[in-house]
Amino acid sequence: MGKSLISNVLKTLMFKKNVNTSQLARELDLPQQTLQRIVSGASPNPHGKTLKPIADFFDISLDQLKGETPLPDSVVDLGLPTITKIKAKEIPVVNWKDIETYLDNPETYTTDEHVFADPTLSHDTFAITLSDSSMEPYFPKGSLLILDPTKPTKDRCFVLVKITESNTLVFRQLLIDGEHQYLKPLNPDLNTFPMRLLNDNDKTLGVMAEFRYKYDDV
Image (cartoon, rainbow, N blue to C red):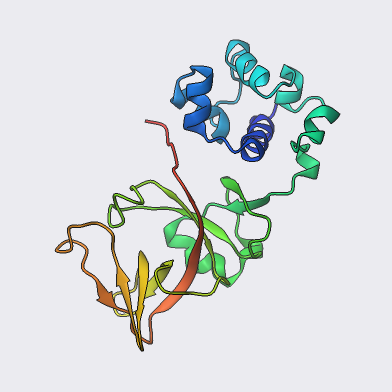
């Protein structure tokens, strides 16, 4: 059994049922770390005793959960398609250092990590993991941000910006006041993360379209 196959099936089921890793772990009384390893594909051969309650939760068989047999028509009728019929868009999770490389040529960028998102998002949409505490408490460090480079900016939206002067990338809230635009951190410690004026030579690389917590292994 390929480790990515069960991961993809489970991600599809979770996406369509609108349940995240934390919620599913609570529902099934399973360790969140164990479930996250299955979802991420890091656990290539999950024990049958672990998979059984997952299959029961989605009302499918173990073979269907493993991707060895198609999902039943009854599941499809409820809006849970097979992998080949999935309507969600698969979005690459991009390393911060690779963001500009990805945007230059999304077609050639390769990564082993993907997430599912709204299918109406643009072809160049990508995801990143928030690497600092500048946007806490609303966006904790480690949060997954899904960014669409084609999405228009507006007052109080959240953007990923390249600060040309320091050659750094920051994720901030955009505040528009007349002709001026400001990048605002949400962390109340403004001495550590100050608000700054957005300059003409700074470049917006993406506007947040979706946000979700990312539960990593500990």
